[in-house]
Length: 156
Image 1 (cartoon, one colour):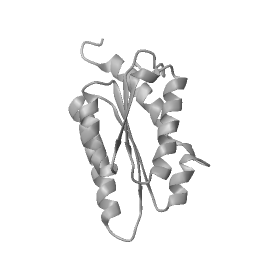
Image 2: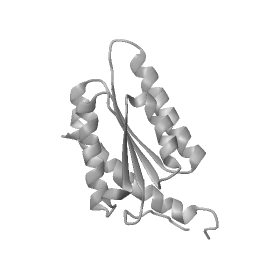
Image 3: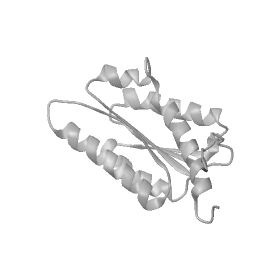
Image 4: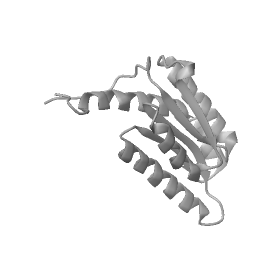
């Protein structure tokens, strides 16, 4: 059996973050968490690009553009249930679009768009009782890069 695990070392990596401005009360702490996670792993400040987009629906397009020049893209947003089906459409398309970008480009696009029933649930995951999912997304990005380095083209 051969087991492959990625490390969490970030030195020398270029990382993109795409964050939705909508529900910025939630997404700003997610971005800060991601930046803290990347810094803790040794990613240089000048190796990180943060792109703010209007909402979660716009994340995939910008993630696709960023994927051309970075080792991973961290996608951050918050879609909070409302009174209409708009919530379902935005959440579904953001998830589908981000996954599609990752598969098409071969660049890890980490999905950390919070999809919650209310603001309290979202805030709990953006630095509250459930930790900071932005920080976790940074660790996920670095680990995925490490795994891909071992299973990429030409790897034994």
